[in-house]
Amino acid sequence: MLSIKTPLIQSLVLSQINQCQVWLKMEALQPAASFKQRSISYACQKYFEQGAQRFVSSSGGNAGLAVAYTGRQLGVPVTVVVPETTAQRARELIAQQGAEVIVHGASWGEANALAQSLLTQNDVFIHPFDDPLLWEGIIPMIDEVIAEGVIPDAVVLSVGGGSLLSGVVAGLNKHGLGHVPVYAVETQDTASLNASMMAKQHIELDCVSGIATTLAAKKVCQNAFELSQQFDVHSRIVSDQEAVNACLKFVDDHRLLVEPACGATLSVLYDQKIQFKLSDQVLVIVCGGAGITLETLQGFNG
Ligand SMILES: *Cc1c(COP(=O)(O)O)cnc(C)c1O
Image (tube, rainbow, N blue to C red):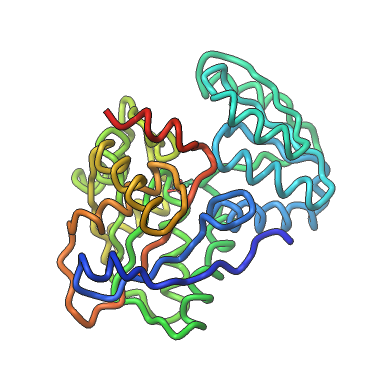
């Protein structure tokens, strides 16, 4: 099983706080703990059908984990090159899936350069967010929501490099829902989509930082920027602390641990940062994330 159909549940607590109907799409329950299971496994499957004999990734995060998981399912070897800064836990999770983990360089740039240099003819490099196949793989997430009879009046999701935004907008479009507002949430120091939207130009940030490392793309993919100009996309920025607080509340309310990258989206609902109408059906993508333990989360809580 590459990716699974995830539950769609109503959050009573978030519905009450926001005075509307809040629906949670539980992507955190994918086997590799995030929506990347959908995007990456779909792309890997396609490349496998085209003859790929090895998948190479340079992500120490949920993308690398999803590549490792998919490679194991398909019986395709996986190599993941990560920088020395990658947490021990992330390395272990990737290695646990049977992938080869190579630790190289002080930054992601160096690890990525080595990953690229390792590519031979039948290897495929799997990008974490910038590949139309990844976006296509996310469309079924929206198909599932519609099939359950929920027609969203708004969608709230997190943005890192913009594959989730790209896939969700493609899914909405497919169902004639291209007019539905999408709230794109970033943390303060990873707000590359926000910067491009403000500048009305596809720009790159000098640096990104903070605890939502999964959202730390200096530049969103071109497609995500274009969608922000063509569709009803609204940017929201939250602090690291707000993201962490939301994760802690979510553990108590829904008994599910997610990364601050996902907590960012949840905090918009917990802190009522959007005005909804009583009749609104609000779809919240609970994107998940494996790079978190309860202990680290509590440690962030300064
Ligand atoms: C990758 C990821 C994101 C960001 O997705 P993009 O497609 O890069 O915008 C958010 N949350 C989690 C848990 C992720 O793994």
